[in-house]
Amino acid sequence: MARAEHVDSAALARLLGEWRAEDVPLPHALAGALAELIAGNVLVDGAALPPQRALAAALGVSRGTVAEAYAELAARGQLTPRQGSGSRIRRGRSAGGDHVVEGRLASFGRTRRPVELDLSSGALPALSLVRDVVSAVDLRELDVYLADDGYYAAGLPRLRAIVAEQYTVQGLPTGPDQILVTSGSQQAVWLCASSLVAPGDEVLVEEPSYRGAIEAFRTAGARLTGVPVRQDGLDLDHLERVAHRAALLYCQPAAHNPTGISWPAASRERLSEIVGRHGVLTIEDRSCADLVLDDRGVRPPLPEPADPGSVIRIGTASKLLWGGLRVGWIRAERPVIVRLTQAKAALDLAAPVIDQMVTAELLAQADRARQERTRRLRAHLAEAAAVLAERRPAWRWTPPHGGTALWIDTGTDAVALAERARRRGVLVTAGPAFSPSNAQRSRLRLPFWRPVEQFAHAVELLE
Image 1 (cartoon, helix red, strand yellow):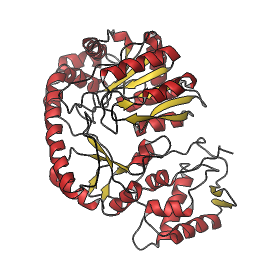
Image 2 (cartoon, rainbow, N blue to C red):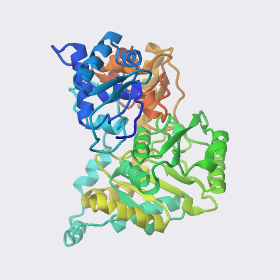
Image 3 (cartoon, rainbow, N blue to C red):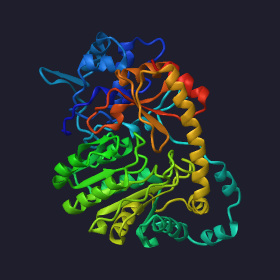
Image 4 (spheres, helix red, strand yellow):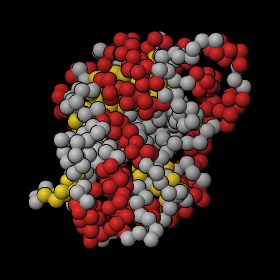
């Protein structure tokens, strides 16, 4: 039997998505949606469902609705009520592992009804520069690649050289053989999690943190420990107390997702000293580092600790340029790059050649791209701040240093708030999705880059 897990009410609400159906009684619709998750092995054998009252609050329904849904599943033989331990999934041997898949990745895979406005992701539309470069792809260069098989496991040499040069300019000398091109930064995170973490390893992540990373490490079988994020970055005193027992630390010192915080130089230096002294393998995710909102520019990478091989850097072109360009990268010492390249080749052989060609051209104009992106994001942030001051003055948030969203303390149950908004056609993501312990229940991540009319309309429906 698979390992039993307790499914948090906020996590289950995210998994269920748009579960209501017209002309179907609520209990029957809820039971059907839960049965779909069980059949798809999203909820695994033995997993304990939330208490009826907690799930009812998260979904904005009566406790009786949840009780009837649970009773229907029990009658079908898919749920086993147990005295003192709640209702547990019963489906026989799991066909696909023993982990409850939840969060960002599961929600992307579920079929949804059309919605009026999707604010569940902070991904940006393309810069105008992208169209210009795509239209001007050098076919003579493409001919060189067309004459080959197109499988460049570690990435196109030209792109690896350009990415390496960017790290060098930022103060971290890097050679092309220290770069692995990936299909976006999400694949980079998953490669690191699946290749560098063993089941049962303790992995330190920020509290809150990027939900895609939380899911990746959970799926690798890691035990996640949250390290609180403060207004000046990671709580380094807390990190000092737990670093000695951890196998890995995942962090985002620049334009942290979801808070938008960028650490000051002193904090970056102290973190490097801590992880170096304790020998903690560290992943620095710089995926949002180019999305700068203040006047201090792109923050440099973490200083190298005494052992330079103990920090792995992740970056991407998708945040700055366009999500449709699935190009990211890993910067590490050569032995690690060789190991991760072998793991990546087993997944997809190589990243798309044309995407890499376009990205190489665009990164050669990275300064221009950053200026355009910063100008647009600042304008949208100012408009969003004015809307919130007028229509939600009780909400509290700290102006972000970077990124595309606001990390808002609503002062109420944001899980229930997000569920009510979903029923009105607006998708937003509540705080527990970004927490390794399903905390942050009063928090809401609210992307601000949409046109002000759309942002204001969404805010009106968030009540």
